[in-house]
Length: 340
Image 1 (cartoon, one colour):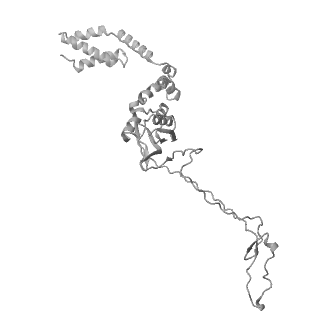
Image 2 (spheres, one colour):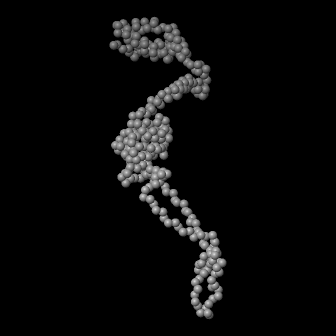
Image 3 (tube, helix red, strand yellow):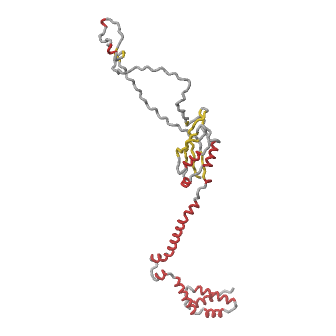
């Protein structure tokens, strides 16, 4: 493709400058006319004829009109702030505030809408991120270690022994034969009247005259036949520790399977994230029945009642034995509630 020489491009440039074309439009119009001339040279026309045709098309009036239109377009693109602050100091803060006002409002509206959407969608988003626990997500750890509870023995109250009052006595010594010089007149025997209300003794003691010597009765002969009429039967003793402790039929594995099958985690405790141990105390009777089930220490939120309910559902245990005889045994079972 033929290209214009530098002198021909300078010729077109001088013409455009002489026609008082807007300097902002000069590069674009020059490039357009140069391309048009190159295309016509390709058709075999001489440059002088091409130049004359271009001058007829882009005459001075057409270029002037193009400059005016360009100025009007630029004026239309100016904002209200440029019109207000035309000829003024635009470095003043008011111009920057007015110029960025639209962007500030746009960002504020965008942030407000985003915050509103987050507040509206937060419950649904939280439900998706933190789903409710399912029954299969709950694990149970069961410890079935018997706990020996030794009851405290209260000390026996001290009983003060009553001291029987001393009987009244009069000093009365048996007579002793002594020489005359050794006889002491003071040791005279008591008078008969004094012995009516006192007993003879080695010395005189001012005691009580109402003391009567009581002779213990002879032991009664116990009959070989037991008397059953009017005697209440002896209550069965409840043991805390025995030689052979009671156990669940099938052992700890069967008891763990039973608790895992029947134990339900209370919904309130699951939502609150409550975990811990519930100690359930009950009595295993001599026939293996479960009696007096109660929670002696728990964690609340329905876990204590659930543990008591499941223990009451248990079948008969193998009773504990003392000296080979089935007896009642108090048993404490810890049940652990734990969330995965």
